[in-house]
Structure formats: structure tokens, C-alpha cells
Image (cartoon, rainbow, N blue to C red; front, side, top):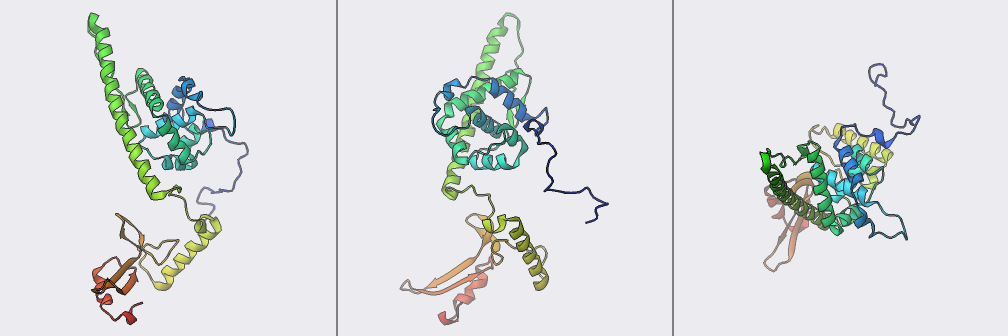
Amino acid sequence: MSVLKFKPEHKEQMFLLPPSVEEFVPENHLARLIDGIVNELDCSEIEEQYSELGQKSYSPQLLLKLWIYSYSIGIYSGRKIESKCETDLAYFYLACMYRPDFRTINDFRKDNIEFFHKVFIEVLKISSDLGLTHIGTIAIDGTKIRANAASSRTKDKAGYEKWKANIEKTLQTLHEKADKINAEEDERLGSKRGDKLSKKIGNKTQLKHKIEKILKRYEEEELDAKQKINLTDADANMMLGSGRIQPNYNCQGSVNMDGVLVGQYASTSPSDLSLIHILTLPTSDLV
């Protein structure tokens, strides 16, 4: 790469002065609004549940900010929020560079769902009073009602009650969506987050070596450049399995009338039809 044509890229470069968390997001960013509103709300009701003994906990305000911001941009997974705290500047800002575990994030929402619900409505109400019509993807403009002389106060109250009912219905739908997503992820991933690279390729040097090995294989075998090769298991092929396309092997087997396995074969071909003739071979001829 010519150093004269392009701007230099130095990932190992040290900062002359450490950056401030305040510099991570623009002044008009949604994260700043949520941060400012939640900081002004009374959270003593939930703070009293925490003990001063033992290891210090993440503050309820911090976890509320993460969940409110996430709901606002369409994220309902504790695992995704944990991941965002490692990669997204808005989350760096809201979490003050902390990286809470997804279990902590999910448990906080489940254990304090009513308080979270109440605070979220307060955030939306204050945002509406500030003249905003949306918080991320959530519409909050339902309180704008035309006043009509002496009946204006009644209309305002009725309008607020209608707005609150609509917002609560929306929030309930989001809570149910979050419950479903996190339950499915817990069942599928267990204690894992699901998006972390294998330790075998997580190391920078090992990853570079594996990529070079894959590229060399493309050249030696004259493979189509569009063909995908998995870094962890280069022999696995992309095919539909468990409802999604992912690196798989197509395993076939045949049994006799007594239920005894008489043939088995593992292939990287996604087509079952192409393997039928193989299973008709004598068992001794199968690999």
C-alpha cells in the first residue's frame, strides 16, 4: 500500500491524551437525551434494594439507560446489548465504558420490569414535552391536541390518558418481544453470548495465518472466488440446516427392515438426491 496515496492506518497508535467519554457521541445524539432525562429521575425506589456490602453493582440508572436506548432503536436482546457495550460508541457513552454481562442486563429488566415500565413512560412524556415526536423508532406525538377555550384542560387530560394507554400498549408489546428473544437465546446459546469468535481465530496472528491458508487453498485448487470457506472448518459447506443457512455437513444414513444401520455417509453437498446412489452401495464400499 502506497503511503503517499492514502491516509495512514495505525491501530497500535497511542492517544497523546486519553479521550473523554463525552467525546464519543455528538451533542444532538439520542443517547445524550436519554442520559440527561434518566439522570434527573428519582430512582431511590430501586436503589434501596441494593446492599452496600459485597462487590459494587452497576447503578440502576446505567442499566435503565441501556435498556431504554435499546428499546428505542429496536434492540431487545441482553446479549446484543452486551456486545454493543464493546463495539458501539453510544453504548460506550451510556455505560461509561463498563461492559456489563448479558445476564446482569437481562436479570435487571426481569426483576424490575414495573419500575422500568414506569421510567420509560416518564422518559417518553418528558421527550414529548420537549417537542420531540419520536424517540428512535417509537412515536410519541400523541399528546398534541388542539385546545378549545374553557374545555382545553379537559381535552388535555383526556388526550394524555389516551396517549398513556397507547404508549403502555406499545411498551407491553416490546416487553413481550424482549422476553421471547431472550428466552430463545438462553435456550439456544446457554451461557454463551453467541457472537464471539472461536479462540482459535480470535488471536490476531492466528487469524492472519488462517486467512492466508484459505487464500492459498483458493489458488491451489482454483476455486471459484465466490465460493465461501469457513475459517474454523474449511471443509464445511454453507447449506440450510436448523432453519438457517450455516456451515454444515450433509449426513445420510440407511437402515434395513430390522432397524439396523447398514449405510452412512457424510458429504459437503447440500443436495440429498445426489447422495441416494451412494447409500445403495454395499456397506463395505461406504466411507
